[in-house]
Length: 272
Image 1 (cartoon, rainbow, N blue to C red):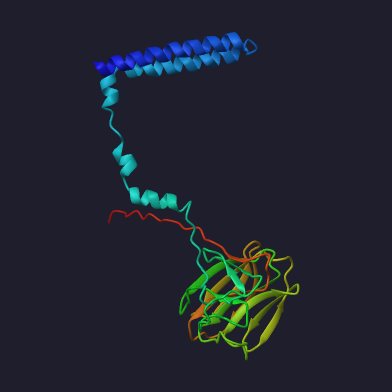
Image 2 (cartoon, rainbow, N blue to C red):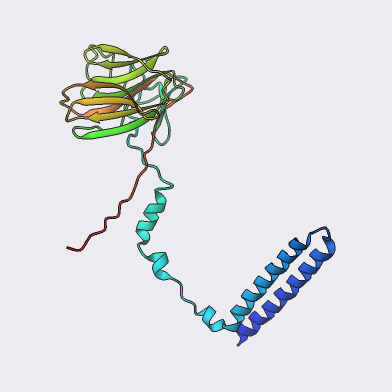
């Protein structure tokens, strides 16, 4: 009963305050149209009606059940669904232990640009020392793989794959074990071993490059995902692990690994 008295007193005060508010509005804002004043009264009526409904059955309100199943059913799955809108998945992340000292990698290891000077980094065997290059963190020894790279306004870049056994120190002589497309001095081209260069005809400046590797079939294809245009396909009988390969000599615009849209599939089993 004390709870009901308290709610009634609270309701009475709220009602008085609302009437005072409406009266002040009417007195001080005579320029309001009749339609606006009616809307204020409608709002007041709705508030009073809701309060009266609450007081008419206080025990029902206080004992109302929460829809537990709605909020907690499949909770982990629903959290995962929502996380897809927040957390992004990038198929390729860069390996900082392979990055040349002249390259700057982003904190999340998804972009790289040419720096202003040489960094003080360990001279480990995996690190490039003559070329401004970096590898992806995961190598591929079979299967099909695909990743997109944003090149944007970068004026000097190479994107492709490199064999694990290729030396990282000194110059690439002969140029074996690297397959990639490049943009340099306003021209596009492709490189395959041994030292075979092919100039590519591109109708408009590329913003993104899609790399598609079929290790088992020995195919490496490059395309423009913005226009769904094929650029070039390199073929070779691969015999060892391949890593995504990148190089750049541009300070202003980085190469950026693009995320993909993750999805959750729910399978419904039919009756046998």
